[in-house]
Length: 210
Image 1 (tube, helix red, strand yellow):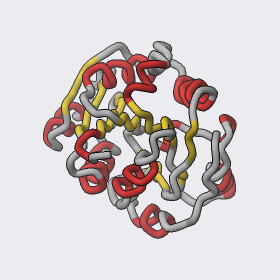
Image 2 (cartoon, rainbow, N blue to C red):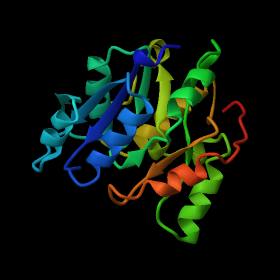
Image 3 (cartoon, helix red, strand yellow):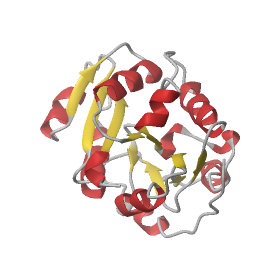
C-alpha cells in the first residue's frame, strides 16, 4: 500500500500544548500522509498550530465520535489512522503499516502502547496491549482501518463518549482480521518526551486475530 494513501485523523479540543509534538511525529513517520485535524471548537491555539504544520482543519460537533466522523468524511486516503492529539507515532510506523496492510485480509489494527510517565498502572496498561482483546484496546493506540471497511461499518458511532473508540474496534473485530503491529504509540505529557517511544518501539508483539 502506498503511504500517500494514508489519512491521519486527529480529533482535538484545546490541544495546543500536546499537538505540536504529535503533528511533528506524524509528519516524520508518515511524510506523505494526509493529516486532518478535526476540531470540536477549540478556544486556544490548536487550530493555528494545526495550520502551521500544514494540516487540513475541519470542524464538527464536539465529541470524539462526531469529530472522527467529520475527519473521515474529509479524508481521501484508502487507509484511515485515528490518532489522539497527545499520542506520538513510532518512527517506523510507515513500514509497519505498509507491511501489515499489504495483506488483503488485514482490515483493522492498532499499535502497541507505551507511556512516557512511570508508574505500575500505566506499565500494566502498556503490557496488556500486546493481547488482542476489546478489554485491552485504547484509543491512544491509533486505530488504523481500511477506508472501505470503515465505511461498511458506518465509521465511528456519532456519540460523544470515550467508549466510542473501543466500540469501533469491537465492531471491526467482529467482522475482520486484525492485529496489533509490533511497534508502540506513545501518549505523551509534552513535546519533549519522545525518547521512550523510540527506545520501546523495537519490543516484539504477539500478533494474532482480534
